[in-house]
Amino acid sequence: MMNSALILGPGALGRLLAAYLDQQNRVALIGRQASSRPINLVTPEGEILSRPVPRITADQAPRQPALVHLATKAYAAQQALAELAEHIDPATPLVLWQNGFQVQEPLTRRWPGPVLCATTTEGAYTQGEDGVVHAGRGHTFVGHLDGGYPELADNVAKMLARASLSAEPCDDTRRRLWHKLAVNAAINPLVARYRIRNGQLRDRPFRPMVTAIIGDLNSVMEAEGITTPENGWEAMIWKVIETTANNRASMLQDVLANRPTERDAILGPLFEAARRHDIATPHLNALWDSTP
Ligand SMILES: NC(=O)c1ccc[n+]([C@@H]2O[C@H](COP(=O)([O-])OP(=O)(O)OC[C@H]3O[C@@H](n4cnc5c(N)ncnc54)[C@H](OP(=O)(O)O)[C@@H]3O)[C@@H](O)[C@H]2O)c1
Image (cartoon, rainbow, N blue to C red; front, top):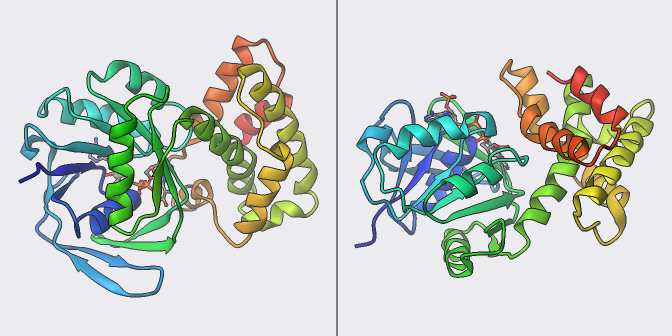
């Protein structure tokens, strides 16, 4: 029988992956505490499903898992993986699910096994100790930063798709991660600071702030050699604001819940790139200073 896939980080995304993948594959969810309670999934259609996913601690992990889905926040990813790495084969393939572009490059270079990155528009949040609400269906792209391991990316995408999580492999992961980062940078810090829903960015006084930030993003992306979206950064970012108008972005949810935000993972890579290319980013700088 195929070895279990492990999901490291039993938060919103980890529980979501566990609850769906469990229908088709052997999976175990790794957290700080083991539990014998099932995961309760609320589907976007409102169905409530109970999944008996094994929930274990890192030291109980099988030595040779088929794969590890790393599903912590970006700031916790390296530490969580280091704890698990003591117990599993270093050749184990990893899938990184973090937003931003903070952990993807170092883990891809340092982890001895293959490393894929996933970018997803699935939306989920936790409910109580054991629940996850699948708030909105999305799509996931999965691939290696440099386009390597296409067969593995294909298998992972198929595994997700078989479990009803729409997914496809891609060979332009780096570009997709930077595009998502640009969208997150234009939306998340502002909505978190002003505690507004995404759609309110369309109105004054926020609209010109978004436009100014897109100007900075444009310069950084160009210098970094990231292909401009088909209709330009403005069109891409305003379209996301439009389609997510009613949403409370993850960074706002973190601020409201008094949790740390993923500010560093989202804005940090932009500053590093700006420094490397000697580009002034006054609006991004102001965003950094005002983001929790
Ligand atoms: N939620 C979504 O809909 C969604 C969508 C797209 C992308 N993402 C991205 O996916 C990543 C995870 O997001 P999330 O919403 O699932 O975050 P989350 O709800 O905060 O879950 C992260 C989980 O990781 C656990 N964790 C942290 N360090 C750990 C360690 N050393 N050992 C074991 N578990 C550890 C946390 O436990 P503690 O609470 O005990 O620290 C928490 O349960 C983020 O980068 C996010 O941007 C999320």
